[in-house]
Amino acid sequence: MNISMYQASVPRFVNILGNLSGILDKAQAHIDAKKIDASALPTYRLYPDMLPMTKQVQIACDTAKGAAARLAGVEIPVFEDDEKTFADLKARIAKTIAFLQTIKPAQVDGSDDKDIVLKRGDKETHYKGMQFLLGHAVPNFYFHVTATYLILRHNGVEVGKRDFLGNP
Amino acid sequence: MNISMYQASVPRFVNILGNLSGILDKAQAHIDAKKIDASALPTYRLYPDMLPMTKQVQIACDTAKGAAARLAGVEIPVFEDDEKTFADLKARIAKTIAFLQTIKPAQVDGSDDKDIVLKRGDKETHYKGMQFLLGHAVPNFYFHVTATYLILRHNGVEVGKRDFLGNP
Image (cartoon, rainbow over all chains, first blue to last red; front, side, top):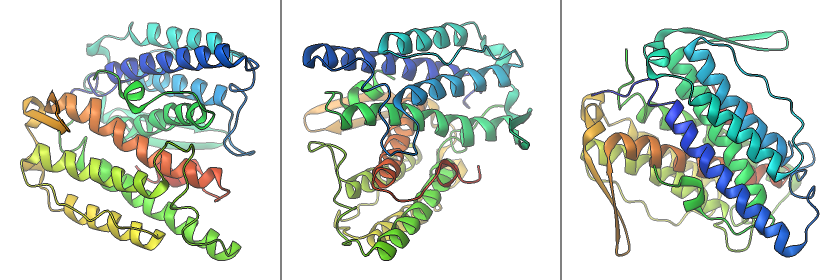
């Protein structure tokens, strides 16, 4: 049997976003124990011209909800990008998971050949559904979840690969 | 139409490993221009108890070749873990891509329900093929490619998301 477009997208995003939420719990426990300022880690960047941790979580969520909504042909929910604390970021993840859970397999399945257009400023990139999911959305999603994890790890939060992978 | 197990694995690994090789070219150009010791970046860790950059590349390669070989039911090629320079790491990536390109779609397709057992020390983890690929191998692969990228980015190598995503 083959993999459906739904199987390769929504449940995978939901699973890893849940793991990311657990990682943020460990980060919260870490800053509570060490009395670290609540803004220190969310604003941390691995290099001055990179995006801060907050933005990594926002983009991970946006990639997941954008991919699922585009493949399903429904409107992409818009969230304010105003998160400042781990609690705010966990709420964004929870909203993203809640949206993903409204998407039914039948809405996404069969979208492998669907035309998907991403706009960034003046530039349009055209994909077919499967290419968009496997070649753009999935790597981009994992990139930003991993970046979040590594920013925390780099700052001494005790998380491990098991927190990232969770139970597949 | 659905996604085949082959489409979700081999060509995706090959594509991103090619991008990773290009990222290492930029890292090489960076250390040449700045006269940085050849061992500095390959041995760099984002935290003292994390794995160094060399190991991130090795594991990315091992995850890709291990997943493809397990799903196809062929022997996993063993590489010595003796890489020290970017050139060595690029050679490992090239060997990995060459192996992946020997795998034919028919060898991997239909492996979604195949029993896969991963052994780590005494512990065995049991998966079905699709769960192993989508829930373990793919996230693990992207984790280590992203970690390599971020170690380089954190150290001032001028790479961008486009280098990571390439042309899907």
